[in-house]
Length: 351
Image (cartoon, rainbow, N blue to C red; front, side, top):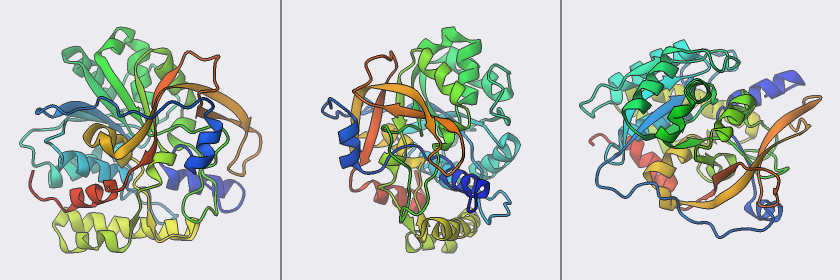
């Protein structure tokens, strides 16, 4: 994002981090065309936890001249670890700042992994322009999929996932679904907080081609982004307890406060939306969301809506789209109670 010209775009993109899609439901309904009754996905009601792969662009605690980097990936990892009765992390891969992500993820696992299992972490793409280039992450993800069929929770750009699908198309059938933090309904801006600034669909816009590979593979895709996530907000008092907690809690608390203040300066609200928790919520608490099933998906190109010049691609869903083979499950609303689940997950000390 940027405050002036290009700086505003860069700053809002960084703050959006994993933002994706759309605001008001009433406006969204008017752009969806022939609407289907939202249904709940068949995620999991089994006694055994669902084994999943996590792909993340985690940046929490990374030094930044703007004051902070987004923290929602870290909160999502903690939430997954503390709901080990619902999901089991087979492996974690990092994307974007792959080396930093690898190191900070290992730090978080050292503090919060009480599962009794070692969870391996692998470095992936750090350029987001190299689909098809094998990395430790793509090799490990492919090896895991050869061993078992599982969903992929992808809360960053799709470069690592697209590399696996491009180089190993036979593994598409091994992916139950890819749950992504991206997407929007046509023409709706991403304007968090007091709607002072428009941000981009970061995870999509950083590597649009990866989404083409994803949808062309035929794998089931779940989009859970801005429109769904914006209902969940963590303010200053919601997380004060972390400052009185463990070593890891105190470290996290010190990184959360600057992020809350940066959001206040840019978006006008003292707090933040933990965007990546809603894709995880699809797997852990699916009944807390409203969905459109099998909604058509298309990549459209038009003028940049974040203050930039020229045109850019938009990942959009609408039942009006009749000319695309792509389909997705689209989460458009979070129901009351999920915010409390996120907060309680951070308080939870025992599995």
